[in-house]
Image (cartoon, rainbow, N blue to C red; front, side, top):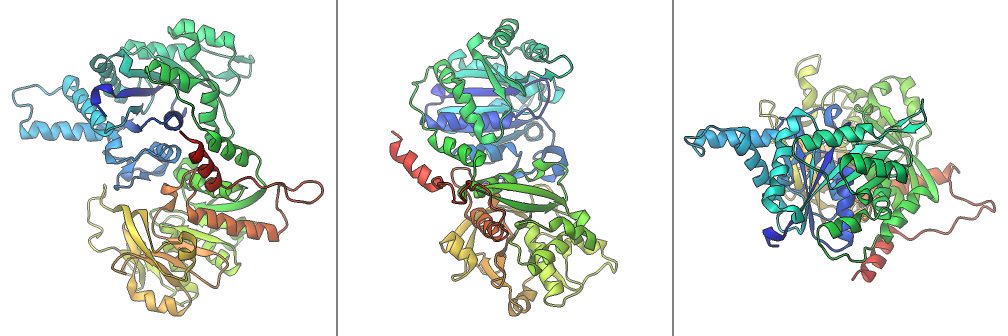
Length: 573
């Protein structure tokens, strides 16, 4: 792709944070891909952290890991779920990275003789990184994190203002996402916050080409006309974005507003017939499922559901593949430390324990594992969840009462624990620098034939993404195997345990990696699909299956994800 012909779409947000710039960017990417254009997506985060890897999930939600091992903002997860764009470390840009690079260049003498300033040195570094991450894409979607008016985001806003000058009007589009709130007291939808947001954007030199107006109520044509007038935007370029019941409706909603066609026209591209039938079928299945299952997600960050966004979406994908609605019950692991707390697990069709760090809530997670193991409830452990499953098995099946993880050693009563069933990986001692130092990114996992994992994946080797510092201690492998645990996934050398399972249990499987990072609505991860299928079997046994008509016969099944995708691929030009 000739860089001179590349088109850039810049997404900004106003009024309040968390409006959904990431989902808007991802949806726009899906629409452009449906028309056959090659895209790339970039997230610019204004915080001074080099990456979010050392942040608490309560700060910015989950940390999403790319194929090449970058710890990034959760919005990159939306990008990868909605599109086929290959994302790398370069697709996540932070203020911390920018200043680190510029300061190192200054120390090396790159700017010798010059005063290093925000303009041009910081803004030039931002532009350089955006161009580098664009690769050979025809259209590059760049999301600017934060809210217009934030002091941290000003260098990024200035950089994209300059890119309009550098690349020209025809090759750049400014899309501003804003809030049009509804005031219940007066029964009115108000446009003034949007007007002020656009005013703030214009004060720093950017006139938006499109306004995407979030609202919980329908935005009338009259209000659109008013917003267009006061914000100097064409009336047809004021796009309504009311709340949707599932995020996978958003591309369809934007298409109904002809946003994709307007954008293609603005970029002077050829408008093609877009194929969105698969998306329509997915939304239909989510809204009108044949069945329902209840899954308990046991974690310690449940107060902020964004902490487990990829897990939740992967469960939804598994549900769609089984034509089932997945009802997720978020359970604080600290509430499960007592026997009374275990009541929170009753009535569930399956339990999932996700990744995490630290000692808080550990005993509750171990208690949850014991409950589902002894009551034959489908169990799925991910990363830290696998480690908790191993500790529970070691304590209550193998009789290792003091089985513990080396991660918790310093907080133990004795100060030194003998039976560290989970311990540091080689080279991962506690005195290492914390940032970007774990086992990160995609690694191969070799599967044991005749295992549940092999029957699910149906292949000898799989690539999965990792984010961990601790691993299973192989000194205990023989004992656990003798007691019935199967180590069904290992690294190439056969040393690192990647997957464990208990064959005598209906569905008990845990992995050291993060399969949720590779699940998409159009291609659900097989582990999540099979987990939901197991949960559905439990639900059916309890006779609480939804989606039956009055005569008691099952409604006509909708086509599977693969069938829908195959059909769409055959009809795509």
